[in-house]
Length: 357
Image (cartoon, rainbow, N blue to C red; front, side, top):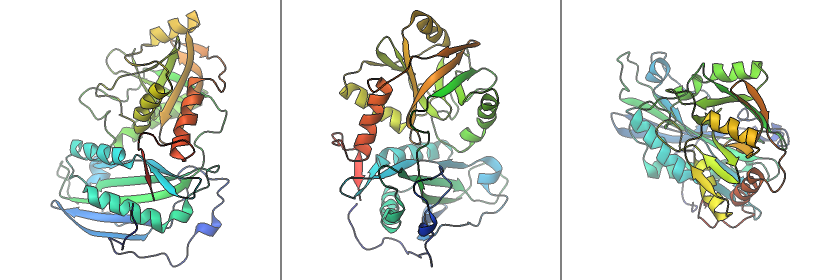
């Protein structure tokens, strides 16, 4: 991201809120940086692109976003590297996925040049909001939605794209292992639906399942397929891996699972580390049998927010299965260390994943 003259009009805040932020105690997604980028699309033409203070936006109550969930989002991170640079992890992959989701919702694509220029300008302006390497990262949230004020059941012709950032601490506390249980009461996705995309509506419909799991004493749910209710797909809002007999196994992308950027990166890094890996279907029955045979060694979720989240207990077929303790030699720990090392610049970026500011 070379430094150049601002590509868009910039309205700076009159007074930054940065001094009031405790970077050692950051909640996830509650503290927002000073500025945001905004652009509007009308009948396929983009205009009103600008950077302005983060704050409320104008949207009519009859907008497509509020009435028909014509809305999507993305999420990725920037980290502070040892030399003091700001490194963004694989923004190109999030940009590509965002436009795939836009196409699925019959929305215009966001121009690539506008996306990357806006990202560079916004990060330069609010770079000081980035936590230190031991404190967290700068979370980047693109949001794109329909603003047309019509009750016709279509995506409309009016849209707004926002790009916002917020400093975040760790999503899960170090050493915490999650507890996850299957649910057959709710289903996340069916083939032909939007499970492989990232519309906002995908997330609202999962909240009751998560809430019921927490009430029952679990951290979140394991999503199963919608037809047979036996094949593992995701966990909570993360992709999922199991280590069975020394092999890392993750469900394949067959149209119902979000193609996570962290998942994609993990598959590459597992190969780098020489850890056998398979993308294949995993049934609840196989997991129970592997647990009984002593070959189910690990389970972990992976995603942008949590990076790699180890699992300590599984609820399968009405049984509570405690997984073996994991240490520094575990697949989850080795994978997390490698991924975070690349993201923070302490390990060589041998795959060219970082975009440095």
